[in-house]
View 1 (tube, rainbow, N blue to C red):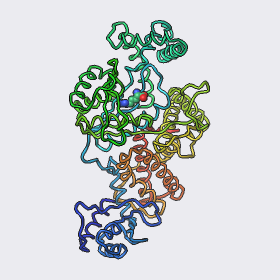
View 2 (view 1 turned 90 degrees about the vertical axis):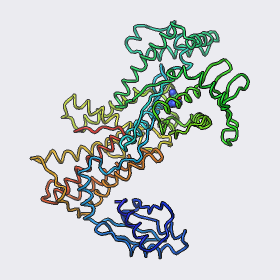
View 3 (view 1 turned 135 degrees about the horizontal axis):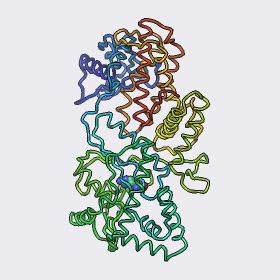
View 4 (view 1 turned 120 degrees about the horizontal axis):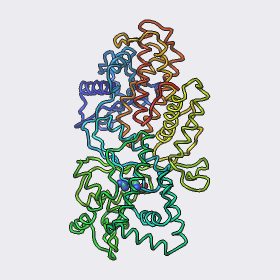
Length: 569
Ligand code: ARG
C-alpha cells in the first residue's frame, strides 16, 4: 500500500510541475496516530522548504492532483501533512492478496547481501550464563530475520576455546579431576575443576605459576596438554549443543578462536610490513594516529613475550570471513563492555585496506529484581540451563492449572515451548540497549506483554477453525471488510510487510515483538466485536480469512523471534 501511495504522490508532484531533486522519494509512512488516517506523508513540507513555497498550499495542490482511485482518500492536516485513509474495499483487496502470498507481504531485500552473524560465542569450559543468553537470543533472531528477507546469512559461533583459562583447567585436570563425575556430567565437573583451581590460585602464587606453565606448554604444542585441551573443548561443545537444541538455535560454523592460531603470526608480520602496526616497548601495537576517538587507545596485537591476543584473533577472523565467505557485512552481537575492542578492530581493519561493513550489535545487562546484576544466592553468575529449567517448570504449573486435561507428554512439550518462548520474548521485546529486569511473573503472564499471551492468541485463533465441522475453504475473492474492528485487524495484518524490513535498520527485533502484541490485541477486539462462527456467507468468509491471516502472521512473526507456537495450551 505504501508503494502505491508513493507512486501516486510522485505522479501528483509531476502533475503540479514541482522540480524534483534527483532520486527524490515521496516518502509515505504508517501514521502513529490513527485518528489522522492510516498513512501519512510530509513531502509537501520537505519540498516547500527547498522550493520556498508555502507547505500547506503545496499540500492542497497535491491532494487536488492526486489520483488514488479506489485505494484511499487524502486530506491535509497541521502545517502540511498529507494523510491517507485507506478505503474498505482496498483493505479487502489487499487482504485477499496476502492470503495467496506465502511471504505475507514482506518484500525480499534487494540487493541481497552476504551477512556473517557472530553471536553467542561463550568461553569453553566455563558455563554459559544469562549474559550469553542475550547474545544467543538476539543473534539468532537477527539471523532469522535477515534470512527471511532474502540475505545470505552465515551464522558462526566464535567460541572462546583458546583463552588463558586453559592453564587452570589443564592443571586442574591433572590434579583434581574426578573421572566418574566427568563421565556423569562433564560440564559440571569442568566447572568444578575450574572453580577449585581458580580458588587455589587466589591464595597461592606457586599454583598461579604452574597454571601459566601449563598454558605455555599448550601453546607450544605439548602433546599431553593438547589432548586434554581437545577433550575439554569436545565435552564443552556437547554440553553447549544440548542448550542450543533446547533453544532451537543453530550455527553454520563453530570456528572458535583456536581455528585461527596459524594465521596470527603472519598477520602481525603483514601489519608491521604495511605500517599498520609498530613496535612499542617490545610489544607490537596498532596506534590510531589521526583518529580523535582512538588516538590515545592503541591496541596490542602481539605481546612482548610473543603471545597473541583476543584482538589479533578477531582481525584474523575478519580476513577469513571476507576471503572465504565473501562477507559484505559482519554483525557482532556482543555486550556493551566490549565496545572499545570492536572500535579498535574495526578501525584496524579499515587501516589494513579492507572494507566489509562491520557492526557491533551491542546490548545492556540483565538485572535481578533488586536491579543489580543478576546473581545466584551464593553470588555466582546465574547459569542459563537453570533459567531454562525454571521457566519450563513454571510454565508447566501454569498449564496444569489452565488445561489439566492435556495428556502428560503433550503437557511437557507445551511447557517447554511456552517456558522457553517466555524467556526469549522477555529478552526480545526490550530495546537491546536497556538493562532489563528479569521477572518470572512478568514474563510468564498469560495476560500481559508476553510470549504466552501471543502463543495463547494463536491457539485461540486455531481453535476457531477446529470448531468448524467440515473443513472450510477460504475464498479470497469474496471479501467484504466493513466493521471498524475488521478494518483495524486488516490494517495490522498488512503492517507486517512494513515492519519486518525495518527491523534490521538498527537491529531492533523489539519492534517486531511490539508489533505482534498490537496485532494480538487487534485480534481480541475483533473477536469480541465480530462473531465468526455465528456469521454467514461473505461476512463469515471475510472473518475467517482475517483469522487465518492473523494466525499465519503471529506464527511467522514469533518464528522470526525464534519462538514456537503450540497447537493447544
Ligand atoms: N568469547 C567472547 C566472550 O564471551 C565473545 C566473542 C565475541 N565474538 C568475537 N568475534 N569477538 O566475551
